[in-house]
Every structure is written in C-alpha cells, then in structure tokens.
Length: 431
Image 1 (cartoon, rainbow, N blue to C red):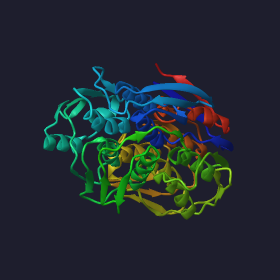
Image 2: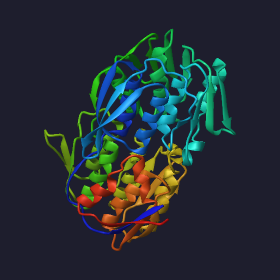
Image 3: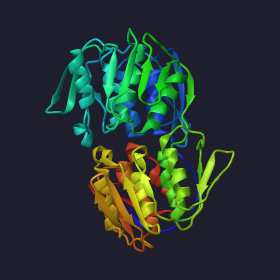
Image 4: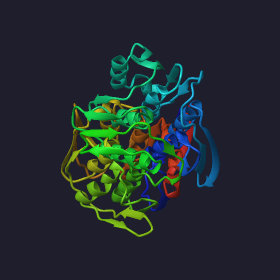
C-alpha cells in the first residue's frame, strides 16, 4: 500500500484531460467484435482498460498497443466477429464495466467462460443476468452469489425486461450482444432509467461501428438481429468524469485550463459544468476544446445524483466549501461502487473538517470556510483518493492519503498531473 503526503497549495496551470474511460471500454469491445482492423486512438491503459483488453483477447481479438506520447496509446484491434471459447478465466480485476459488459458476450461462444475479480467487484450484484440465464436455461455457477462466475450456454433473442435503477451497465452489456443474435430483440425498462448518459454513449459508439439500436424514449430499446460490427478508426474524447476533479480544483483554488473536452459530448458527467455554474462559478471555454472554472465563492444547491453517480465524491468537496446547505439525493447506487461512496465520502471529508451527514440515499453538507487537514484513506476507491487530493488544496494543515495507488484504476497519471499544477506531494510506500 502507498500513501501521499500533501502540503496544501493552490493549483494553477493547464492539464490535458485523460480520455473517457466509459467510451474507451465501449470502443475497444466494439472493435474487438468487428470484422477487420480498427484503430482506437487516445487510450490510457489504466487497470480497467487492461482488464477489458485482456478479456477481449480471451474472446479471440488481437490487440496491439502503439505508444502515443503523454501516457496515451493507440490500439490496433483485429476483431474476432464471433467470440471464441477460452479455457483461461477472464480477470476483470476491479472493473465493473468489464465484468458486466463481457458476461453476455460469453453467451455467444461455445463452451463455459469463467469470470474472476478482486476487491469489491467480487460481490457486486449480477442478479439481472442471473434472472435472464434462468429464463433462458443458460447454466451458471458462482460462489454463493459472488465471483468467480462460470457461464455456459447460448443467449437467445427476445424481449428482456430490466430494472433501470440498478446499473446501466447491464443494458450496455446486452446491447453489445443482442445485435449478433439470430432474431430481433428489445430491452424494456421496468422502472425509469437512471444514468441515461451512459446508454447514449453506448448507442453512439455502436453506431460508429455499424450497429443500429433504436431508443424509444428510454423506455424500450429495439435491436435488430443478424447485424455485424464494422471496423473503423476512432479517437476517444476527454473524460468529463476526470475533468470534474480539476474543474472543482479551479473553483476552490485557482484557474486551471482543462484541455481536450468536447462541450457537445454525450457524456452524462458533462453535467459537472452546469452544476458548477449553478453554484455560482463562471465557466470559460475556447474553440480549442479547453475549458476552465474561474475561482470564486460558491453557493449550496440540491443535486439529483441519479444520472451522475460518479460525480458525487468531488461535488461533495465543492459543497463542503460552499455557502449554505447542499443536499445530494437519489444516490443509493453509490453504495455498491468500488466503495460504499456515500459512507466513504462522508467519512473522509469529515476527517478533514467538513460538516457532512450521511443519509440512506444521499448526503447533506453544510458548507464551511475552509478545511483542516489530517489523515484520510481511499477505501481502495480511485474517486475517493482524487476527491481528497482536491480537498487538500483548501486545508489549513497537511493531508495524508493512505491507499493513494487506487488512482491507477482509472487515472494512472493523476499524481503526476497534480504535481504539474503545483501540488506539493511526497509519495511513499507503506509496505
């Protein structure tokens, strides 16, 4: 385990935002299911991306990495069109997207496929898939509801009823697979769909690779069978989920220019821009896909997190330093992320002097003028570690973050970018 010691300082400068993790997953999988060779540019090989690439290699795709500079890679992917059976288990590491996207694809291959994971991923719920498997007579075996999971059987086209308030990842997983089946299918929402932005991304990326999915007002998705993925060249745009950390740092510290952000993006977490503006901060943008949040005073607001669960830790940092009482609601799904993010966010910000109360499905935060400092832990959750790092810029005494290596899950270069913006940190190994 590692830790970073941070001597609080204002951050200032320019940072090139990492490529979208959500889009990268989708583009890699779509390319790996295509006939021919695709070129996927601007990929950071975080642990989550390594897991997805490894999984698609297990299905028969050939994926070669080309150094692209600044920690980016270009992936040359020769697709397999129809997944092959592999005797090797697919290690999803701690990536929920990898696990939930790749499970339905296993039901296209001949023979059993085994999925493994680590950390909290081992117990992340998969009941939606289990219900489908039981309905269709697909054999599966797990360890008392936990990973490892073995799936053996063929998925059949039809109508799939899915709850929309558990995770959009299940819907995306089916969207990768159903177009390849013989016969038409539909996915019907039994409850209102949350995280609609992630489904928009899925449909957009699949369309780039030749797959057509019809969206009937987010209540039903119509998927024609016997489609084929087509190889293409694709560049992954910057990630608003990661940009949120630097935009909030700009609000509470100094101006930070965030490069490579598409303001027309379908990413749901682009909502961070609107939230910051509603809390009283001006956002400046340029034609060069660069935006920044000007530092200043912020005011509290009520935030519905149902469509933006990944933003809650960093929004909570901003709310902790805003005038008034901020309420974050409809965040129940955060309890089954890499950590219980309602609990971990409240716990660690409280240690830094924030006035934050945990609710069953959200948080109530009374703003304070500044934070104090101290020792916090990441809960092995990349977003908690990064949120605490940003919070440190408004602390009156040093901050130690235990478990700082967790950022490698999504943003391996986070600490280097933190230092490049003027952050004063000492990284150490705890053994």
